[in-house]
Length: 137
Ligand code: FES
Image (cartoon, rainbow, N blue to C red; front, side):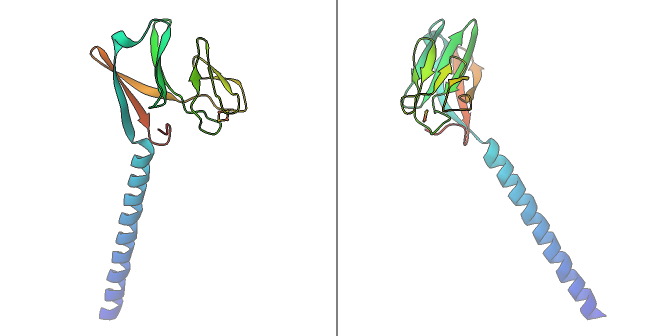
């Protein structure tokens, strides 16, 4: 009888350990999928009206257009080259993909739009964030 009780306790301990491990793994995976990295703090006054402020080394641009401000990753969604920002479009020098100013694909081979990065207003500044995996610097 005592042996059955001990086996049962051992079984319950193993079950508790497995449950805890499963919970910890799920929590870790959820966090790593949503973790953000701050890329820059940009003065609003530095963003030109109907223009873009390009951070070539950090591979993103902040665009002001029709009263709105947004940030685009310049990492091409085809194979990861850095796209060039022109007046009305963004062009990838590697295989010729073209994106509009919102980052939507105009011409392939890319099939996915450029990633919009999260912006947060901080007084006279904008904070630019990317989620891990969205933007490779
Ligand atoms: S990497 Fe941009 S078109 Fe191929």
